[in-house]
Amino acid sequence: MAIIRPFNALRPAADHAAEVAAVPYDVVNTKEARALASGNPFSFLHVSRPEIDLPDGTPIYGDEVYAKAADNFAKLKKECPLQSEETPSLYLYRLIMGEHEQTGVVACCSVDEYDASIIRKHERTRRDKEDDRTRHILVLRAQTGPVFLTYRAQEKIDSLVAEALQNNPPLYDFVANDDIRHTIWRVPTYDPLVTAFAEVPYLYIADGHHRAASASRACADLKESGFGFIGNEEYSVFQCVLFPDNQLRILPYNRVVKDLNGMSKVELLARIKESFVISQDASSSPETRGQWSMYLDSQWYGLSLRDTVEKPSGVVESLDVSILQDRLLDPILGVKDVRTDKRIDFVGGIRGTAELEQLVNEGKAAVAFSLYATTIDDLLKVSDAGEIMPPKSTWFEPKLRDGLLSHEI
Image (tube, rainbow, N blue to C red; front, side, top):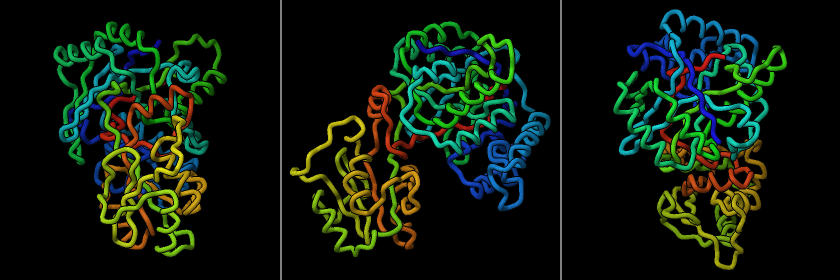
């Protein structure tokens, strides 16, 4: 069963919501975060990326960074201000991007269920990133960014969400600077939704593996350092937004490689032809699964596996991102571990294939690969199998904003 719990959200008043709302901490670097927060003292990036208020070159994991996060959080609470909801509630969060619309339930989910894999994972986490967000949670005594979860859609939940949308006025409704519309409702009558989610067998992390892992570690630290643990402490749950799987939109996560591994263009194409059929003047985006587009020397090529090449059958091995890695990036371009190899970089689908062309044309990369998007069904199958997707397999869009609803622990 999936346990969801209402919480007393710490949130800004409606007239400051758009100023507070910030992109997730991990989709921007320090320079980008500083530019986005410039001139806006209420931007939540001052809390989630506090190094932007410290001198250039400050180590992002230094003690002074976490101290600044705590100072900025206290300042934002006082000056914005941020106020805690008087009574526990669930919330609804709707995102609209162009013609795409998705609505999720904002709730707290169980750390125990995360640890027991009732909340299922598909991605490995990095220890340094876990350390960072764990310390961030413990210093602030708050979870300030939600974990993005999904579940197999249920008609009962859909009906209850639709009813709640009709019966409750929105708390916030604004269009962010990236033209994505964010609308949030408070749902004070939450028992029906809590009961309905209890019938959902599993939840799945779509995005936010490091936030979830850090919430689990923070819970363990606080449990160990405290006494008289009951099990209903606020740190025993973590803030999530739960979207039905049939509403989610996944974009490709494309790749660029900085050099051709000592080969010429002719040599590279010859090596690729051993496993792939190559077509010239192809589309910059593959039209279906089992196809890849490659940008090399100002030209797009289409790639597909030769009939003579044995097709992988495993749930992970058969993913397009895995085939590209196993058949081309590793054996031909020499990219063995995409987590550590500095020769490869990743470009989220929202940035478009024009950025791939620009990186190659400007000499910042030698070759680029455009992929067909991994599907939500792929994600669920991999998670159910207890396996791990290759890094940078999915790019979810639109993205939630930090700072609108925080969970104090």
